Image (cartoon, rainbow, N blue to C red; front, side, top):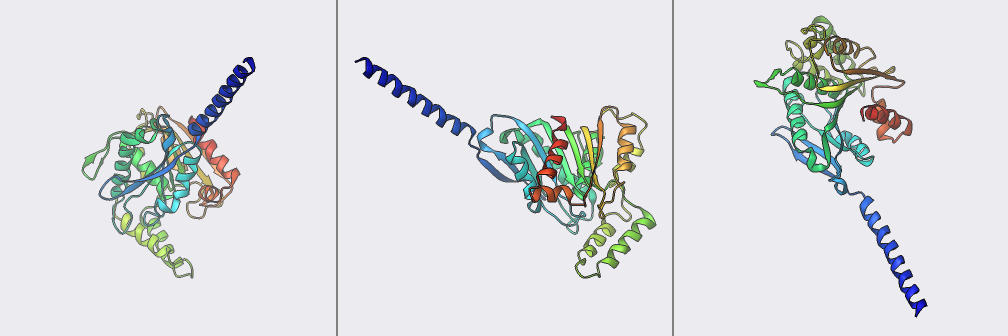
Length: 311
């Protein structure tokens, strides 16, 4: 009788262990999902999240693709969304109007701002914490992410609408263009792109030249450095992000080293509450993106170190 009782207890014990093991499996088993949302008449975005962790509010990475204001898409850089999703972030990639669909940088800013407002309002539904958001962009995306954040923080008017400040833990510009030529220098750069486009394999540069011609010549409001130059020293309490990080690469021939310097100078001069960091890596224009695409552990660790510096 006693041995039967012991056997019964042992059987129950084994059943409890099996139940706990199965429960833990269910608890940690990820359910990774990508959902596409139409955030406006002009653009859509993808939310990468873990459906099994909707109740655990996690940091959010919003990535703005590059492409010289005239090409590129969230789909081309989908690996960025998957990368952050797989390591526990909620990530968002967005599309915005490009040349020739628009000949206005402010249209791009309006699209990005509209997408950011959507994220701020809705990201909790996907397990994201709106108070723990990082805004990141590469190349032209770095320029546009920064410009949008600056215009919103300063409550500037874009396409007849007064923007409202947004809040980010971190803004990261990867190889962004933060110094834009004007006048003769701008025209000379455009002419050079047209000339280079005649070289086999470089025909795409004609579109880049055409985009700059239509988006920049005779236009204003696209240069965040010029905007900040209008403000007195330490006259801005906050510029939308608690920390700004500018990433440059020493072999970048598209947006060469030094283009971030004017923006770094103006942020440090005008903003009271901000941390500014400047990271330089040995690589080309696509260094960080190619590192993630190719699953290079060293480059992935470098990017994560930057991202996690605020958490």
